[in-house]
Image (cartoon, rainbow, N blue to C red; front, side):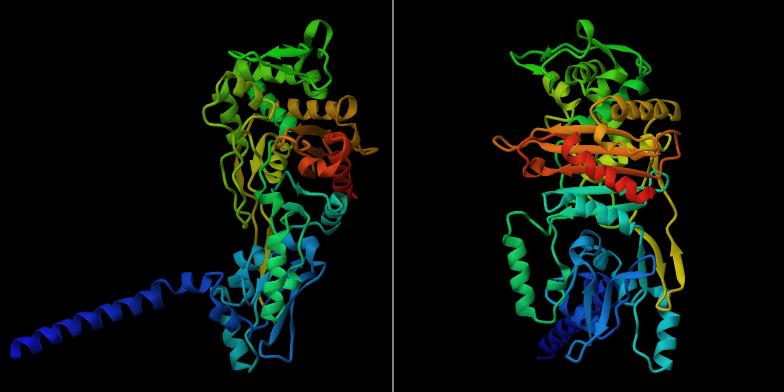
Length: 484
């Protein structure tokens, strides 16, 4: 009997210790992770009793909380919701938070450790706990120009400050209205969410950051960079540019979009090949350089890296082990090459920034509940994609594209603009994608104020797809908005 009691006591002791260990883990080690889970409704309910801090552009809130008379004391509202949805995301009683609402939740909810003094002062003064604010890098005029330019067509626009990596525009189309998901009516929220999810156009997809598509001829900038960095090419180097190129080990050939040779006798210079977007020239260069050199150059620009801005962007991709025909197609941004609009904006930005790639960033400042600046983002270099001298040469080649080549619709009177068009094959039976990347002003290396990437998926539904015709005017409008 005594032995049985001792065994029972030992079992109870073990269970108590296990319970204490679990409680300790949950309270002190896992609490932050549990509270941060998007689906944690209890945490969201607690936060709805606080005045959530605003998301700002300058001093203007694009997301703010207003008092209500219902059980949940504050309602989240978004001014011009669809315009800024790719950045703000939504804050929902049913589905938690996305976008900046999620990544900066500790600041906006007032739970950040830097607000301890503020919380104590608020409590002693009998005031409710109030969240801090987040100021974004977006340029309102550039964002407006990007979204208006997309005009409901499926696509994305990203604009960067090449010198800092600050994101000036982050537009997605079609978009969604986060106000419909921040309602205090759970049934209405679920209905709106279900409608967005069922929509084949995927309005809640953050296209600038996560949609990866073949970049087409805009990738010729990467191939040109690899050529210049190899030391075997300069802008004036003569390269083959026949009307068609036999792809090695196949019966197939690659033709130029014009159907003709790219120069007298099927030869042209590297600079002219970029200006007229000569497929056979860049496929030949890709074969001469090899896939390892192309991949290494792409990775220096950011391919293969998933950037956090702080929203997580999809990694762009260069194929791992292409054969010779696949390498030729990869050199012109086809086969299995895929890129986000963010990545292609980073390529053009690096070329304009003396070859230096900057980490992209969407948050400019973190502010206290009293709107005092607590933290200002510092520009961070990702790496050196190419030498300043070669970057300057490639920037000059981009200017030639706009002034004498296929990118004329990106030109701005009185401003030196560099650009590159792109048309990329999509799924069988679907129209190609239309791309345009650009930088301005491009007259002096390292002085550009804006780099832009525009992509219209399947040409935005146009009957005739051309990057210069469809995407360049959008890029031009965004550049003008920044430079104005």
